[in-house]
Length: 119
Image (cartoon, rainbow, N blue to C red; front, side):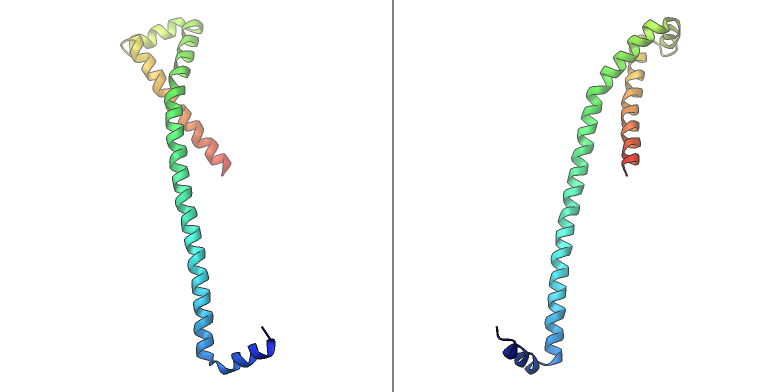
């Protein structure tokens, strides 16, 4: 486009028309940016939810393994205290489930600490 014809065309337009055109261009660009960031926000929420579900099921898988390891270590290292704990919790199974719950909770606590350090 020839610059002279462009400037002649610009002179013919009123200030109001130019203001409306520039305002519309800015508004359209802001809308497109807002939609872009809004879509990214939804994606991040979906990814965060999927990550938490993954950690929940991973904790469900790891907690029994860790509970068995701790139970076995307690039985070999401090058998008398393990017997006292079993009496206190009214059975070996109940003691195992308490250790299992503690392991499940500690996995999530570790996850929260790592998340806080990462931020």
